[in-house]
Image 1: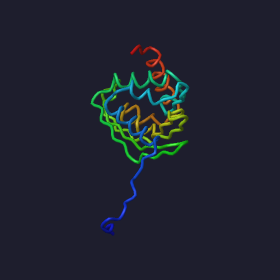
Image 2: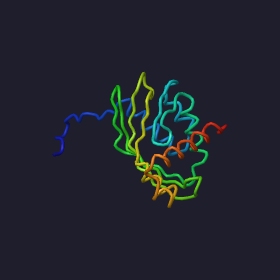
Image 3: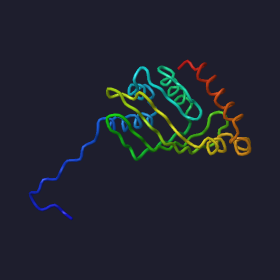
Amino acid sequence: MAASPGAAIAPTTTHPNQALLVSFYEAFARRDPKAMAAFYAADVHFSDPVFPDLKGVQVGRMWRMLAAGANELTLTFCDVQADDQEGSVHWEATYLFSRTGRRVHNVIEARFRFRQGLIVDHRDSFGFWRWSRQALGFTGWVLGWTPLVKRTVRRQAAARLAAFQG
């Protein structure tokens, strides 16, 4: 139903933390890890199936490493929701996995907690087996669901992050 002439239409407002998440993912889409890190609290905690327990400066280093190695990255995001305490985003990334050159389409659900206008906790969830089948090929298809492959991928990712100087 259309508003009658002269009727006031309530403005739509965006919660500041929702705007923060939009800006975060816009920076991600631009491959701007410095801008992404600015949205994190100094004591931020990050977790996903590959990097299960990163804290503080490790989180910004991870994004710098991933951005530096991102080949043919496209990123989309939607369903951005946030309030004073928590938020969530659905995002998808398509890229060439640097270790194998294989194309990956990763579908991620992200959950956030905020403190004083910054992200203090960021948890990304995605299907590790789905990811490993794409990123690792036959090995991922056959063994990607096993704890052994997950541990190996985590160990290799941690070593790359520890060695990264960017």
